[in-house]
Image 1: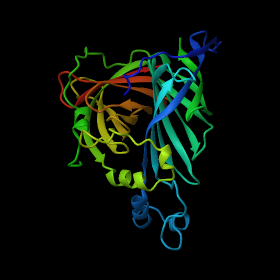
Image 2: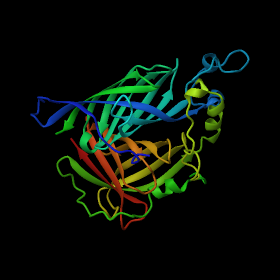
Image 3: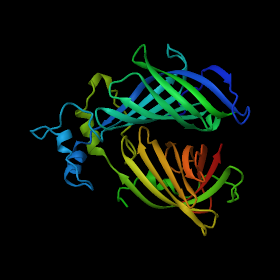
Length: 179
Length: 177
């Protein structure tokens, strides 16, 4: 999947940064549009139930997860569920210029919040980002934790906002790259 | 070790298909090499969670484009499955000088690709790396995202390739900022 797309990274702006160690660090802004292509939700209800009786802790998980009839409260997602999102990435809002793929792996905790690890596979390299995403939330911010090749040593952040046509727009501020 | 260890997982540590020039094991500035030998593996098959999730989930069905071919084909390595791989780290290509351990914790997504978190435990600190991997014996490039001790604040990338003359052995090259 990674190599199916022509790769054109939209380099919206390139800004020089005066780093403490000199001018060997660069900063840039990237923007792309993501359309989900594949999604897999993993319902770990059996693992949760098993974990209530067999676990290394002294917890009363039932109070959090189960109602009086022994069923899980509401529709979830519940703690321990996870979801995988595959995205196609485009350089333009009209989604005519594919530039790569994206992948989110989100692990749900409590109150329908998930910790997500993501990567964006672009022509010049990978960018990784992680952070919290609320279930159903379309606006979130992740921290960029690293990158490879052209994004070697990358840091920064990714802001996600809704875009037209069931798409998400990702605005990346990438710092710390080797120039 | 799981009896259902998939071919993809076993191939992670398979003999080389790529010729890799021998590299010095000593630290060269911020670049260094480890030789890693896989010692244990556990594949976790979440077929039941996947099937349940396709029916009982908090989403509108129309919002969930299920992967049409992602969960077909090769046995195992399907979306949501996990693989845990333990490796011993050596500083020399003869695997004589043990310097630490590593663990790869991988969650498969689609098309037999996984996202892996790799933890390296060395005598003078630890490092963490993350990124996609196919676990089929092909080269893996992960971003190094942090560390402790001597590797506090480590940032950069690692490249893992099969050793061309040692079965179940990987050559892991770190490049740090």
